[in-house]
Image (cartoon, rainbow over all chains, first blue to last red):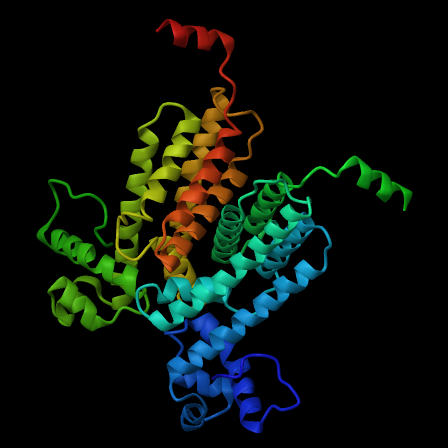
Length: 219
Length: 219
């Protein structure tokens, strides 16, 4: 198994080397394409010879998959941190939207969103990468869905809000907006979509009950 | 110049051959990637030897660009036809959304949206294809913008509606939804985004003036 998680006290030297390779290979794959990156580019980026890379990963495809998972971890961690920064479910949703959107100006990883890159590139060509892209998108949908569900339970989100619909609308619009912003080198496209999504998400904000409003004022 | 427009009475044999090559090459490029399609795949699809292809296009890159433009023409024609099918500006916007969305179930061309494929693939690698993708996206934005502007002028769209914002939201959400639908082999993602966009577009429908409502009833 590739070492793409966080390192621990029990990490072996081999695991640390694999992690270092993946950290350096991930930007290459994300920019050049997970199928399109050349061995030569990977050798230059990682500082290891072809034989060394094969020693650690067995194949370029295995290195591509490990690099993809690492890239997705970076984005996922950023979105989870954004969620944790807010108390209210609706504010959490908006924080997740804004955290992803910041990637249009300051990419977490060169080359855009690894899920979209892989989904587009691998849709007709690479079933294993495609499966990993599905898992990564599932995680993102689950993050949004769980905020909606919890928010509905505690009365912060309007009852009857469809978590699946909201997850699809948010991820579709953000992925498309990142594509447009990168195509035009113009983050205005992302800004417009963020404005739209924030307004849409605000529509599911449950009105604060009178009792809680009074408590908030008293504090 | 590649012959990617409609043929006319004055089309030469060379132009007809080029068009036939482009029609057969376009699905290969759109599925395998505009940089990723191999010469062998193109030879098989077109039925011409490598030398024959170079005779007509000079390079694989030139054939890729001509094939991209052809693929975009197919999508563009579909969207223009959808617009022409409706009288009212808001109905035209919805018809354009639905026409693009149909591609999630019945693709106009195998491999998904050529603009998104090229935007994702060419963002870090191929400036010429990227330029063509920008032109194609400009055309789509212009189509939506012109419907909004005309609709505002004739009072069918609420005054003050931002044509740029609407164009960005519609194209981002549809492109992202197509990506999700293809990633999961599940057009439900597109259906959810269409529901969302139709509701959003309906918000800019200007109320029918009393005089016109009376006329409509009388007819």
